[in-house]
Image 1 (cartoon, rainbow, N blue to C red):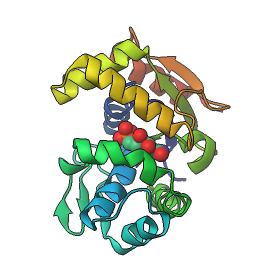
Image 2: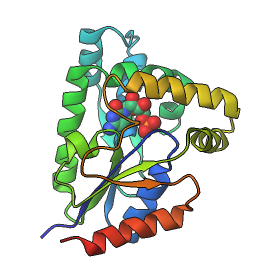
Image 3: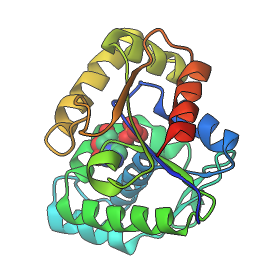
Length: 218
Ligand code: C5P
């Protein structure tokens, strides 16, 4: 039997990446950041000089690009057309354009198929983070979590991560949550998910809760 699939959804700044990577390392499983996949697709679109709102051209640019994703939690690299993209996918240009690209139906179908392939190939199990993992990508996951936190706390964390101003970051997160709400529902707990609020809970305790869910299953 293959290892467990753990799905973690939640809005920006809730702590998904840190929790998912720590958990994957702890259980010797693979790790997949689906947000990085939408970001990589967006970088490919910008590199091709395509306007993110041009549906057909966006789809073509994404399908023509070579997107590669590392799934070890210690080195979850992203490459676009053979080039290391870890820094570029976190930049402002990509962050501003990603909601539009992620709203493209063909792009979503293309990336969701890829996500399902990666999950099926992960024989030792996998921790997958995103916005629609529980509801769409892997509704049969062994453990399903919705990780959330107070908006002020989320903005503070993102600002600290990026060395940015907390107020500007709060506005950016709000803008992205609103734009993303047309496509996924980042601010709503998906059906069947265990809700964990990380506002005052340290990362290690969030991870411990998910480990407990894993050992209590069935
Ligand atoms: O998680 P992160 O903030 O890196 O995600 C970047 C963007 O990718 C989100 O704002 C959203 O537009 C998109 N996304 C998505 N579905 C996912 C993960 C991310 O639409 N499962």
